[in-house]
Every structure is written in C-alpha cells, then in structure tokens.
Length: 255
Image (cartoon, rainbow, N blue to C red):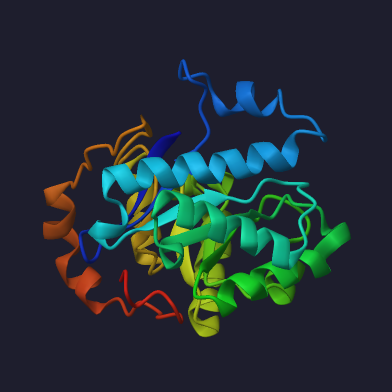
C-alpha cells in the first residue's frame, strides 16, 4: 500500500489517509488490479483491507485523529452483513479501530446492485464507520447514487478539478455541487489538486478538504510529508476563517 493524505486546509490537519494498492516492488495499482479475477476478487479485497490496517496501525494514523480511507473493491459480491463482518475481523486482527475507517464507493460502481450497496453503507453507518462516494461526476449515476446511498463524504472526480481555473463551466458545476453537499450535511473533497490556481478556485467554492500532489504524493508503506504553503494562509486568512464547514454525523472526532 501507498498512502496519500486528504488535508483540511482550514484547520491545517489531516482528515484522512487514502490507502492505494501497490505491488511489493511498488508496481502501480493498474498493474496489480489487472491481475485480479472474478474468482480472486473477494480474497484480494480482504487482503487489501488487512494490509492497509496493519500499516495504518504501525504508522499511527488513528492516533493522529485521521481516518484510514479504503476503496471498496468494485464488483465484490458481499452481502451487507458479510462485508461488515469481514471488516470487523480485519480490524480485530490488526488492532486498528474500526470507527477510524472510511470506505470509498466509486461512482463507477455498477448501479445494477444499488440495493446491496445501500445495505452495506447503512450497515457501516450503523456501526459508526464513514462512507464516501468517490469519483463524483465521472459516471452517469452520480445524483441517483447520491440519492440512494447515505454517504458522509463526497469526493469530486479529478477531471472536474484539473484545470478548473480555466474552465468556467466546471467552476459552476463544482460550486453548485459544494452548495448541495453543504445543504445535505455532506463533507466534500477536491481531489487531484496540483496547482495553486486550482486550489484558489476550490477555496472560493468553500471546499477546504483537499487531496493532490500540491500537498503530497502517495508514498510507499509510509506517510508522506505534507507541504503546507504558508503563503496560502496569508492570502486566504480571512476567507478561510469565514468558511463554515458542514458537520456530518461521525466526523466530528476527526474534524
């Protein structure tokens, strides 16, 4: 696993660390996921959870007050009860607190089994875990999936963020999405942030949970050093102080 932080730029803290699949020789996620078959998908998904929790426990992620964000393996045929039980078993085996977990469901996940995804999200929420909808805006299911599944975190697809400073239409979409998320009590994350210009636009939209190379690249089996651009705080001190972040159930302990 490699880890990349989601930073809370307003509070200058780490909201979560996302665990990203890598090979033992640091091969990319694409290389590794391409080897997963239908028959090995469930075992691979569980192995990823265990490995992520082992490393997170060793690295002290929960002690920092941050969440460990784990991607829900697309197409894995768990029932809600079985999915949660596997997570609990992994947490008990590694010693990582289960309530410090955030599961990311990709918008690209098939809508053919929305009922099962809803049941899994409900089961996780019932036990105090955080559920995120990833890649929002990437597929054709975004608003339907958001309406159907109780999520606490919404991650904008990177294609909406990249170059947003020169794309007025994308700016309006992101601004409207952020306002909608705020009214729903959902935290919103801007990912794939690489430039100061992109950051400025996201801040103007009220988005202060951010992920991307501007702050830190993923590092293999370790926590990267965060780049906190001090000039950012000087320039935006008033606007950052004036931004009201929505508070969702289960997130106050890490905010």
